[in-house]
Amino acid sequence: MPRKPRLEFEGAKYHVIGRGNYRQELFTMGGAGEAFERALLETAESARWRIHAFVVMSNHYHLALETPLPNLSEWMGRLLGVFATRFNRFRGERGHVFQGRYKSLVVEPGTHWAGLIDCIHLNPVRAGLCSVEELETFGLGSYQHYWQRKFPACLERSTFLAELGFPDNRRGMRNYARYLEVVAEEDASKHEELMQSYTRGWALASKEYKKALLEDHREWEAAFGSASGEEYQMMREELWENLVTGYLKEQKLGEAAIMRDSKSAPWKVDLARKLRKEGARNRWIADRLRMGDVSRVSALVHGRDTPSERGYRSVK
Image (cartoon, rainbow, N blue to C red):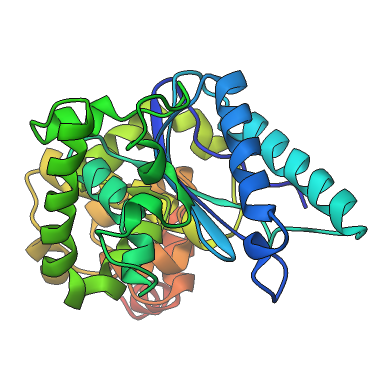
């Protein structure tokens, strides 16, 4: 079965998450974490990526990654391939190093992006491995690099510091550390909720931003056709929902009309046909437009009488 394509465009921002395939803690094995970090920074330089934040945990990693060129899939493939080769050669093993495909969510610039960067930097703190004060020298990630006078050119510190009004230097990092202490304390009770929101679906963004992405990249939606998969199904349903919302607004109808009008109202049939052209399933249409069972939707979309309507005409 062909792999589903990822949404790629110039200047895209992503939350990339990957998990090791070993039950043990993959990145704590004999310098594996350091090797992955080196491979990541090498890849970022070659791909011209801008890494705003990253952290390598015991068995997974998080990246806040910006791609000036639409090349996420190409270079993530190279990164993971290079690391797997080095890891297996060093360990004298064979087989998959990572657990399935990495996940990539498109992230909206602004508050969503800023929140993601903070969440990545605080990942060890929220895992109970260290305090914010200890982050500077703990583990592997961008936060440690940002305290150094010189760090890899692919790491982008100035942007998120500027967003907070902090200078791009060690004084700015001291301000950022104090800011993270406040964030960590405020979000302590919402840790699970935050992590789920930053890793769920296909985009970390507002409804408006998602809608604009779908409208600007319709060829991406068409490329995977009826492919399954949770994140892609969510994306497709949002596309259908946007069509419903736009149609109701254009026809000067409200949500109340869906409940008020009959299951076979002409406007519902018209909208159902438009939704079918966009790949919407009859079950989704039936539920969203309150059109009864799936067979009714199929019959109305194709201009056939439903059983009840045939019976009504025969009595007449």
